[in-house]
Image (cartoon, rainbow, N blue to C red; front, side, top):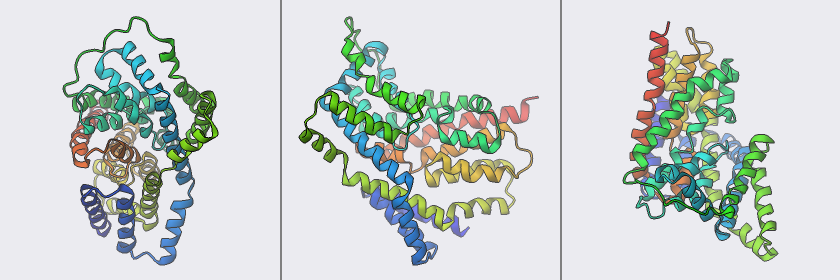
Length: 399
């Protein structure tokens, strides 16, 4: 109970500070300091936690990825590539709703930390003239990046779930498919208010407009086909583009300076510090053990453990890695149970205020936190009907 009260207090303070428009990095560092105090962590433990957050592989990869995403965005914007891509999509899909969601869906196929930042400028460009609020655009970018994580075998959370449970990938994907489809349908209710009609037909489609997609095609090939990590692929792509467009040394340095942004670094440090503190304090593990020790019935455990962990960490790997091994010792579980637990954990991830994609998207569009959550909360509630309904049908009515 102590852990639940302490974590709740931390989240209340975080929400207040975000409403006061503190920078997210400072909010997360403050939340980490609160956890240090609540759990009476020794100076040596605090130093070790801070050190691990700063020098971790995830911190390095995230810093490189976000830095070079900013550089790539700058090059594509300066060379009018983003507008050409938007025009090409408008000419092919034409339906305004489909055009708006196509970019985050495409980039969402890349299983990368912070990849949502990649599609932000594309959504912004596609939304020109559609009279959408910053919260509408932020929700569109955030929501439509995430249907893939439940079904795309490239995502590490899904891979880990199948390894722990020994459920075949094909079976897990089929069980989770309704979640992804539900998300795609539900998003239209919350981000497309007033968006109707089609863009004009493009009679003479420019070859150059379709060629503008090549940077993303190459990125997808490097990451998906050749298995290269996204941050390495981004470095290669940025320098290839600067060579292709014949950037001078002075122009290259200007792009590099733009990429290395102090606020981005602060944001990354805050996120990684908070996650490391949650881990070293034992908060997540203690809450999980509390539910099990109290002999709470099976269904609430299947929901609460992954949901709370997902909410606290904002990472699919975190709820799969911490909750699923605990479930393996519980009797009476089948593939549908684990699929339901995955759906519950993912609901927590989508709602998490420390979800990197949410933080980056909100920051790019300068969206109001509460205005964004007024869309996310009901959307997640509707989404969760899919795993709940599927669990009830297959566990209780399937022969």
